[in-house]
Length: 164
Length: 291
Image (cartoon, rainbow over all chains, first blue to last red; front, side, top):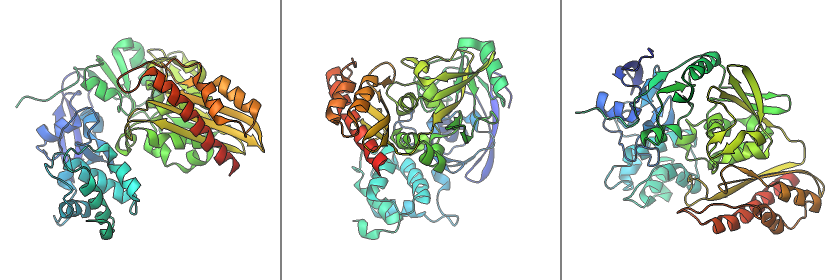
């Protein structure tokens, strides 16, 4: 990586594909995903880490893409909502459960919710309701009142009796 | 389409040694800022509340990402993520107060990136880890052009986001003392929503021998320009023993405070809540010490 004030070139793996981007150091990962890589599934809401709409997986960990400079990430592996479905293209358990339980209305927060819940349920396959609510507390949704999202999480971890 | 950018322009540095970090800081002085997890710094830059000519990224520095047990302490390196410390078995068993404080920070996505050292160096007076470091008498390890030095937590926090670190120094690790048998710890805070900065919070540690209090430590956050050690309440608790009236101890802790008012809470309210969170934190600590 060069240390000039101009553009810096970084190579990252995004949804399994190696991509090289040249951008200013001040450009956020969220903007690079949307503008340079045309991956507009990652939504940009508050742009200061409060809303969670821009959540992506960085080397498997759910993070806010608006709180990272893309130039920091040379060599990293990134998964966005576009890459979160099953390998055969079918919806993953969280995506399917969000659809089945009306976990979304306008859909703006949905990419962040899906990415966050996918990572959370991978690491906590049998959460309590309290743990589910805590896990989605970092993703603001102004439509659903969260009930549909919580029900989706219940279904996705194999508790369909919890879903309405 | 015009490119979207939020922060002002800066030069990015990604050194791989502490020596190179310190060299860059010495060269650029107050025009440079150290970036660790960035969970507080990047929003400040995006909102242009802070601007820097140079950003020095610690994330590629080799050797700062270790958690180790060393000489009566657990030493957490500067780039250890909060999530890693939160789930580390040694942190949980040896310095339980750190493990109990961590889940209160932001959300799991924030803790996946935020660092223990960065939170302490950022020194937000309403955050949990600075108060935890203060209560436990942690030691901050710093590196600068003249070499390394150790800073006691009680000398580290100087004001709102102001610490004893010089412009050309970085925090390289924090050492948290391991308490002995019969210890217990508690964290209590009041926030409007989970993950928000606390209106007021307290961390507490006690070490008991029967009803005798061997050691007590209480620190408050969100009630002043720095985390605040409740020394008089600690002394009152030690004197009264483990069966102390914790409501009175809480009031003792709150008495010297002069918290400011903001849109979240008035100073008077914060002071009342301070007494309550101290009582709750001590209650949990005593319960754990006796279990």
